[in-house]
View 1 (spheres, helix red, strand yellow):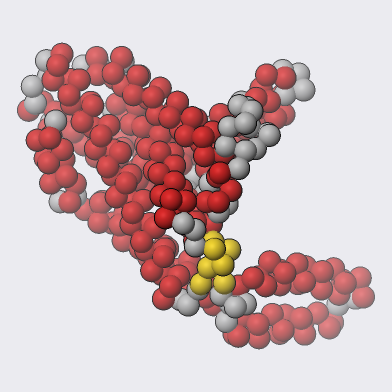
View 2 (view 1 turned 90 degrees about the horizontal axis):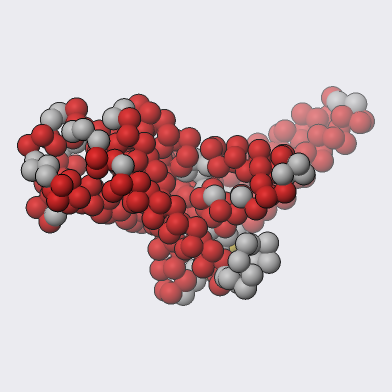
Amino acid sequence: MFNLLKSDFYRLVRRGDFWVFTAVLVVGISACAALLSWVASPDFAVMVNERAADNAGLTAAEQVEAQADLDEDMAEMASLNDKAMDSLTHTWAQTFLTGGMLGVLGTALAALFLVSDFEHGFVKNLLMSRRGRRIYFAEKLVFIALIQAIMLGLCASVTTASFAVAGFTYEVVGTPGELALWLGLAWLLSCAYAFIAAVVTWLTRSKWLGTVLAVMVSTGVTGAVVAGLCSGFAPALPWLGTVPPWLLHSCTQLLGNSASTLLAADTGLPVPGLPIWGHVLLVGGLWAAMCVAVTMAVCRKRDI
């Protein structure tokens, strides 16, 4: 397995899409920090004042409505005036986790890499006995998990550096234990997303389907649709109301707050008394375990 891992990382760094995705990550996060820095700048305040002046030609009712919208926008941006963010982990979550950047880039990269083994005939050069198949697919799951760790490390590092350069500070940074817990759970969820895309890629051998699924699942679109349908049909089928907390999308939203909230128990979660971090660990672990089971029971038996 170790030789396969070395081979895969050697091929990964020679692939153009790896460097393209890395560049997109750096540019996207840096642009986000720059945009927020501009919102907190005097130039943005001048633009807002000019917008308020433009409301002079409106009717009284329209001015009241426009002023209410303006006040709402300014209230949302008030916390940025002194460039002080709520917490480091909240900034991480809003920058690359809840929006799906981490999931999309890591999952799509994994899906493209996996299908290339079959497109370019790499897998045909390996010993594909029963034991060889188990080693091959187990190594690929480990490789995917390592890719997610690399992408998560890049996202966290670039986000922290970009916001520091832009002059932002944090009201709460968090203890090393809290930061490690948040990063560990974010890595677990990103692995679960990537494992789902890997299973679909191995079953279909289609890089387009795997990539599209990576976008739909990792951005939370699929989870939001499923949660909405469950809530809509819950009055007729009450058991559907218990489904949303078991979705990866719901767990991703739970990580959207600061790491300190993970230690609290949430009465709205299925398991009473279980802290939020325990629920995320349980759900993420279940989805990852299901993907591993399908991989070893079904995917590895498909014709090479």
